[in-house]
Image 1 (cartoon, rainbow, N blue to C red):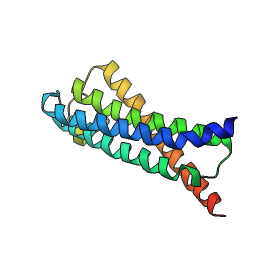
Image 2 (cartoon, rainbow, N blue to C red):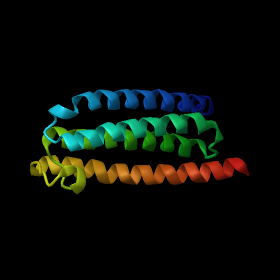
Image 3 (tube, rainbow, N blue to C red):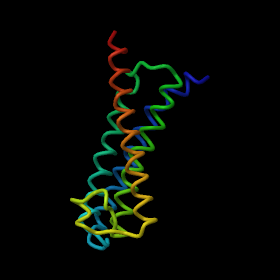
Image 4 (cartoon, helix red, strand yellow):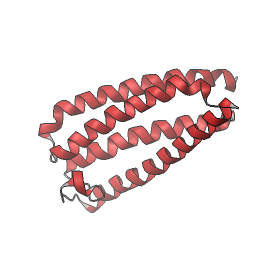
Length: 145
């Protein structure tokens, strides 16, 4: 049963990628109204690139050879990491926050709570994306063998 469901996850990644790409397009329209438009541009680009990344992984999903539970973990890490990336940069754009992103943040700073939320998202999404990328590489190498 679980194996049959795994086949659908590639399709779900493609759909999630298209959704994230669409969100990125909409964010792009709103860039001028954000408290920090430069961070809004970052959110726009992060959403577009992460949407494309999800679509590509969805297309190669069947070539990744990992255990079923690892594949489910990979799916969850990919969804979390890509959407958390959009969320962190979007919140920073709206709030005029983002101390952890000094270039796009332009020295702007939000409240302590806002900065903690953004920091949590940034740290956890970085870990999720590093772990998922390693898992994809391992799974592709195993799939070749």
